Length: 127
Image (cartoon, rainbow, N blue to C red; front, side):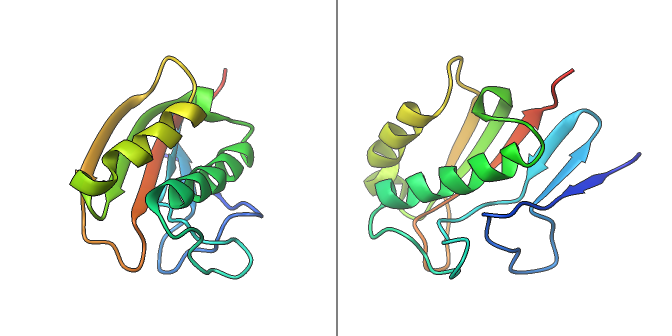
């Protein structure tokens, strides 16, 4: 199996031993992406709505590095630091940003380090 590593300008650099995204077998898989400013690395946004906007902006840039956009996304996994408190605000931003038909999605509560939301995506490559 051949894997293609995707690196994108305008997306925060990995904070560990992982790739921003990898293409394999017709799909692009992103790493979990947080609400970090791509230049400073600082967390952007004081609430889950602001942080979600930043995460989706980072993911948009990562998809674009391979000629994709949100309409190509088939699966999304979302981690919220406080699922009960933040789900509605996060979901509002998500609905305003993502393309119909919405991808399959899993949303879970997770312990996150200094952030309220982290998202990863799987996108189908275009023919």
